[in-house]
Image 1: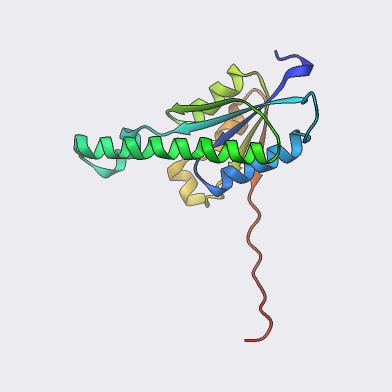
Image 2: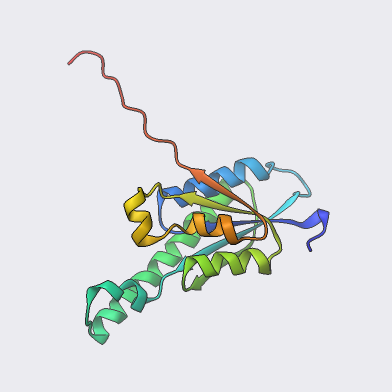
Length: 167
C-alpha cells in the first residue's frame, strides 16, 4: 500500500468535456498550488479504444479503414495528453504519470488504480440515460462496484439557460 506521503489520485480521461471537467475538479480538490511537497501524486490515464473495437459495429472493413481509424485514435490520444498537461500546468500541478493504454476502459482504469495503489479514482460522468447505459455500459458504474479504492464520479454542471430579458 502507498505510504501517507505518497497518496495517489488516478484520473481517467477521454476526449470529452466530462473527463476534462473531472480532471479540473480533481486538481482543485486534491492539489494546492505552489505547495512545496504535494500530498497527492497525480496519475492521468487515457483508455484508448482499439480500432477493431471502434469499428466493431460497422460491419466488414478494409485494412485502409482500420489504419485510418488507428491514426485518428492515436491523434486523439496525443490531444488528450496535451490538454491534460496544459490543464495541470495552468494549476502548477505535476503529472507523475500520463498513460495511454489500449483496451476496454473498465479493465484499464481498474488495473491502473490497483497498479498505482490509488487512494481515489476520479472519473467524469457522461450522463447517459438508462437506455444508452444498457447498450454502452457505464464505466463509472462498473468501477464504483469493482475498484478497491474510493471512486469519485464528477458530474459536469448543466448549462444554465441564458435569460436575455425581453425579445
